[in-house]
Picture 1 (cartoon, rainbow, N blue to C red):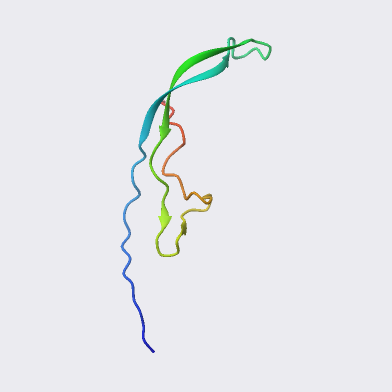
Picture 2 (tube, rainbow, N blue to C red; picture 1 turned 180 degrees about the vertical axis):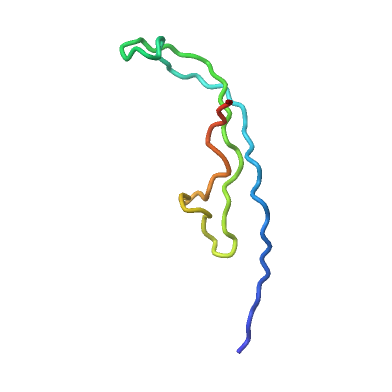
Length: 81
């Protein structure tokens, strides 16, 4: 019987990278009033651009909450504290 062995090395997770995008969003004029009219505002959004992580041995996405796209490295939007 012939055996085939593979060597797999683990690497640290990559850091999350974000790209700044200008978007037009419809937001309420008075946020706490449900009847407030909506106005369009141009806002700067930081979107996640880091690719998803995959298990190269099994060929499947990594993580318990991962879908067919793999596990995200960071949040979809970067919200400054």
